[in-house]
Length: 369
Image 1: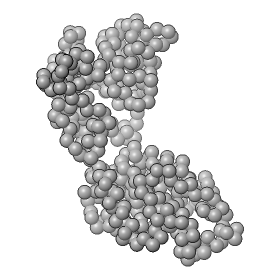
Image 2: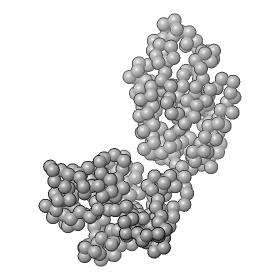
Image 3: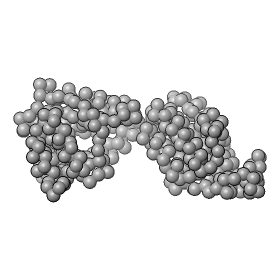
Image 4: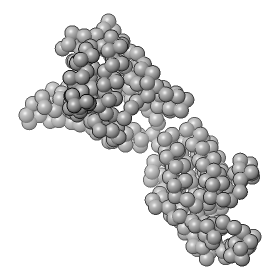
């Protein structure tokens, strides 16, 4: 809750001569929801700005739902059961779902407007409008109520998240310092977040060499713990029972992804270097890690001819002779990444040069300073 929501809630309570219940939805497994404690602490902080005699804070033990007519009706029923007669509805929902802003109230269920159905159970719905900051009056107003010709300021949710992510200033008119402090504590700028560098490429492309060299450089820089999850290391210590079928390859990469996500969640750096030949598995690993921190995919795009020329163990020759089944690049496909953050061909490129490219990319994305 930021200044616009604060001012609208307070104004609505006064106009309706009502007490105010702050009722954030915080259900689900809290150990699997990194934003839970930041959300609760930010509500505890902003509660102090509301009138103490007429404001209560209660955590609703229900997980957030996709915005829809039914979800709003359920919210109205829950509000009524908590003793509320008025419910502010709408606002900036996530991109999923069919309702945004005041459109919640125009939805229908069983051929009746949601607003009317809520009224039948004794809950009046108030639509949350598009709010703007009117600089001349130093207050937030619904855009429709803003004076003609006044200077209006807005900050989209996407822009707010971008500024938080890279540590840029949030305007004083947008939020309260104590709320921002809690959000920064929960989701620090990228330079203090954990992240994963995920190398993928053919056997012999140079993944392990680059991963080890990068790990050494990051350890030298200090500031965060660095963990190397090389393909051979993981196969030896975490996936020793697995073979090389597609199913087993997927399990191995997902295990790497899970360990990397735990390291990232705890603000460390994970460096992974499996072959990871399948796009969907890489997408799933990316989604798992991006939920808790940063993810940089690096395609080591060394041509197969170069990889074979480096093959001291003769694995490619054995695979072409049919002695090694399901060998990536020969008898099993390697699906080239569609949108990796960085692509490096190590043919004729020194290790130090390649690692420097990676460090520059991490600096550009804000993970290093």
